Structure formats: structure tokens, C-alpha cells
Image (cartoon, rainbow, N blue to C red; front, side, top):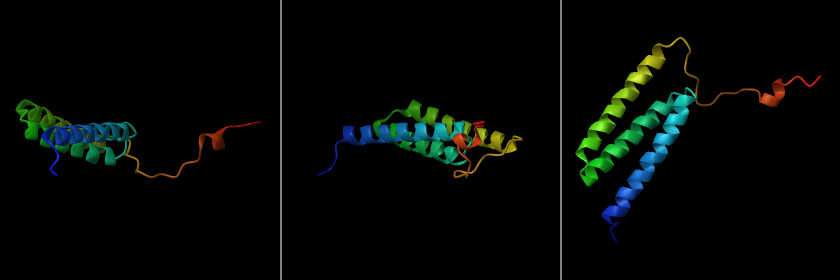
Amino acid sequence: MEPSASAVAQTLQILGWALTLLGQVLNGLRRRQGFIIWVAANLVMIGLAAYVGLWWSIGMYTTNTLVCLWSYRQWRLDEQPLRPMVERRSSWWGRVRWN
């Protein structure tokens, strides 16, 4: 049984929303992977917009992708380096002076 067009569009919309949220959180934490996820989210949303015929939205998500690539370039040129995805750090409790 083939899924309905509405179900496919809704699934793509939820996937795009979740990827956008994750990508923005990772960007806020200055993680490189946030940019990859942000671009993936925009590609999903471009696919959704093409699927349902929202041609102006394709332009908006393409612009989002270009802003993402520009932002990555700016962050790469920044003095503070991006942190890796997984980093060993001591917990907040380990840094508190109890005496």
C-alpha cells in the first residue's frame, strides 16, 4: 500500500523540523556537525516544497542553505575554534569548591 501524499508531506515536514532544531542547537554549542545537519534539514524542506509545489519556499530554503555555508565560513575564520562533537570535560560538580 502506497502512503498518501499528505502522509509523505507531513513526514518530511516533521523530519525537516527536527533536523532544523537539532542543527540550530548544535550551532549554538559551536559544533561543526550543526552545519551539516542544518544543510540536511534545508535539503529535506526543499524536497518537501518541490513535492507539494511551493516554489517560493524552495528559494527560501536555498537561501537558508547559502546562509548556513556563509556562517560556517565565518565561524571557521573566527579566533575561537569550533569544538569537536564529543569532548571530555569534568562535570560542574567536580569544579565546585566545597571548603
